[in-house]
Length: 153
Image (tube, rainbow, N blue to C red):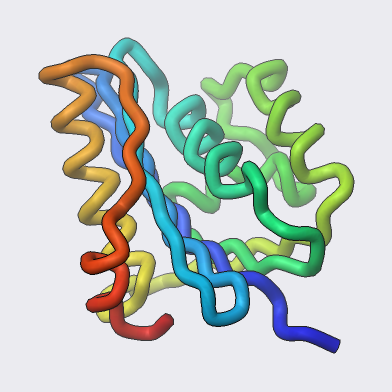
């Protein structure tokens, strides 16, 4: 049995400006990859879901563990049997439900992401939110040289 794929996902949202950013780091065996993106006029849930969909895109078949922080875990809870936040648009979860339907993905909430790949993803999500605020929607691959410095992969 092979080891599960590992994903670290972080989302960032600015309430006043309504811009959001997401970032993920993905370890599939020895192969490490990551991406970041963002959008204007979005919600925290839409931002987290957009990041999740990007992280799952072209992920090879197999079991996966999704590591997220407490805030993102609350936003993604409906996908893993939990209750959606009161302000959530339940229909907005449909694409993520479809993406997860054929996958074995477990949610792992990290209480303290310091020193983990999640902290790296969180920093990129904050940067992506700022970039989305100034330039609009985008998606970019995180350079391999940056990923090579991430502790805990």
